[in-house]
Image 1: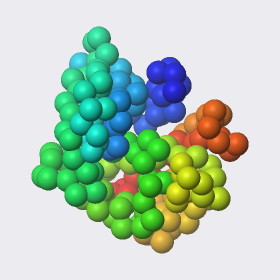
Image 2: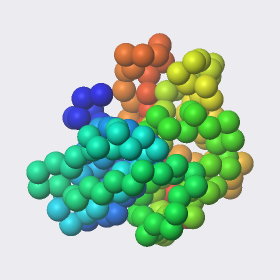
Image 3: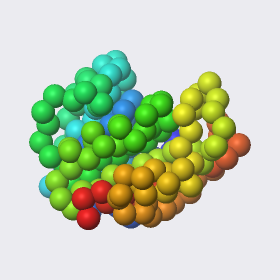
Image 4: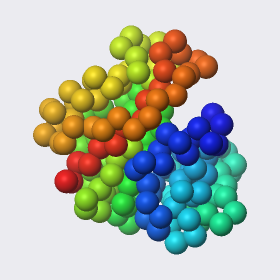
Length: 173
């Protein structure tokens, strides 16, 4: 994904000087986008099980410092509470998305922001085993008794027929 597209998809949720964790960061496209949006007084913790991919994670000049942690974000060691969590193309790998979101809620500092970026799909595929369409995300938030997610932006996908969406959830509001 183009860095400008990554920033556009999450910009409406991010405020300068916040602390964010990019869960399932991969090689850091969204960690860099967070770094740019947060500015020098913010912080980014990029977390992924793939330590080799994390070796490519970089911040941007004048952006927030980016630290990396090689770990499974569903079984994290103690980390500082974050203002926001970013799950870019990560939740579709979890069968029990409800349990995953419930665990992640405990990593947030009130009011807490959770940004989800997913394919707007209903049918599974080899690459998206447990799709999380925006409609399904709305239903999931209602089941969790969380505020309804707010759709932030959309992006065409090169890999899937449907596009991608980003959404903001504030589970501690």
